[in-house]
Amino acid sequence: MHVIIAGAGIAGLTVSLALAEKGWRVSLVERTEQLSEVGAGLQLGANAVRILSELGLAEPLMAAGFAPQAAEVRVAATGKLLLRNPLGAEAQARWGAPYLQISRTDLQFILLNAAKDHPQINLRLGAEVVSVEPDGSTATAILADGERIEGDLVIGADGVRSRLRNALFGSQPLQFTGQVAWRGLVPAERFSPGLIPPVAAVWTAPAKHFVHYYVCGGRMVNFVGVVERDWREESWTEPGDPAELQADFAGWPEPVRAICAAVEQPFRWALYGRPPMPRWSRGRATLMGDACHPMLPFLAQGAAMAIEDAAVLALELEQNTDVPGALQAYEQTRLPRATKVQSWSRRNARLFHLPQPASEALFGAAALADRFVPGGAAARFDWLYGYRTT
Ligand SMILES: Cc1cc2nc3c(=O)[nH]c(=O)nc-3n(C[C@H](O)[C@H](O)[C@H](O)COP(=O)(O)OP(=O)(O)OC[C@H]3O[C@@H](n4cnc5c(N)ncnc54)[C@H](O)[C@@H]3O)c2cc1C
Image (cartoon, rainbow, N blue to C red; front, side):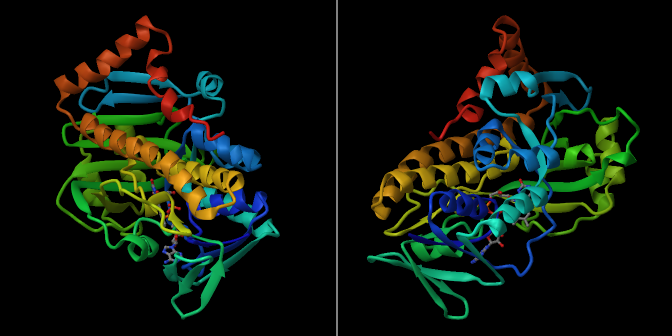
């Protein structure tokens, strides 16, 4: 069996490995000549780390990632701790795998190295898939230079601006959220010891929030700062002005100000919402990852959902040799879950930006529940991090 995959991002690389392991011949076609170094940090819940570990990647992941002790939510104005969810040994015991923070570049290169070593995977850089013919006894991917690659299945793992999504289903509605995210990476050695705690930290305020955590084995600090503003460039590579970042978070607690002062080149991207698609598959073609369910970053599940998609698709194709039937089964399993995660991400955007009394009341209720039922706060995330594809 031969699959053609458009896009060597997190989704495309993971599904290449998962299918190659099951004996498929993989043509992995990536538009860029060289994979990018611009990505910042990503969080990988136990749901994603478990799948990557089953692909034999636990060792490099642990070496490149950082395992936080907890997730902490605080009020920016006062520093008050609203909620603390343990993410260390307790989380690993509860969800069966560690919670990791990792730079996107490191994750992509770990996957890429495994793909390069795999005899079943043929990686083609600098080739763009522009269309697909899915309806027949085979499927064909059409490249920008007119080349046609025929196989049993075509997967569009070509990211948020997916050409295959447009080719299969037409252009999809897009809505600006009114939010802009700053992001960047800062060497940890620039901070005085102890200033940046080893946790996934979220600072909340009306109409703004700021997240920071370690990546690269603790050598770098990643941050994302979200502000409500009308600026609409949806790009991963748009540099921003450090002075503007500092002004947005002036007067915030010391770790936030220190990070904003230390970053040499912050980036910024406008956050767009996309309603769930009713279908992801047509004939012998399907979509995965950001191509079909782009996530707002507020539940930190964009990469994890792409990784889950890959595992489920490979499993369905193993269990069902009828490719269109397997794609329907994949979509029925994945679409409701991805939609739920999209909706929780939107909900967190509202929660993080509430005025203080309301935010204290909401997070306080969760903390109280945890005091009466030990592990109560963690239990609210069992559906997310405890997810198993088998
Ligand atoms: C450069 C970059 C930086 C990012 N930085 C962050 C970040 O800081 N924080 C965060 O939360 N998320 C970030 N993301 C998004 C995050 O990686 C994804 O949400 C998640 O990993 C899901 O991955 P995906 O594989 O579906 O999409 P992506 O990671 O976007 O991968 C899609 C891949 O497809 C390739 N491609 C696109 N069109 C075509 C085509 N027509 N033919 C062939 N190849 C094609 C792209 O070059 C890319 O390699 C970034 C993505 C990119 C591409």
